[in-house]
Image (cartoon, rainbow, N blue to C red):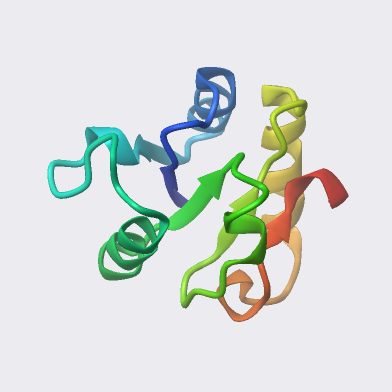
Length: 107
C-alpha cells in the first residue's frame, strides 16, 4: 500500500509500516506540500498520486470525506498495532476508498 503520512504521525508508525513493505512518505517531505499543508491539500495530493492518507489527527481526518482511503490512528496506538491493523485492513474484501475514514484502533 502507498501511504501518505500526515506530519503528526509518529516515526514508530511509519517505520513499522515500512517494515511490512509499504511505501510510506511524510506529507512534509513532499515538495508540493511541506509541513504546513492543509488537510484538503494532503487529500488532493494523495488522490492524484495514488496514496492512502494516515493521520493521528482524529478531530479533522476522523470526519473527512475524500476519494482516497483515510486511515486514522490515535496517538496512543503503537507502531506494531498500526502495522497489524493495516495488515487486517488489506485482508478485507472491500475498497477502503469507498468508505468513511477507517479508525485503525477498531480493527
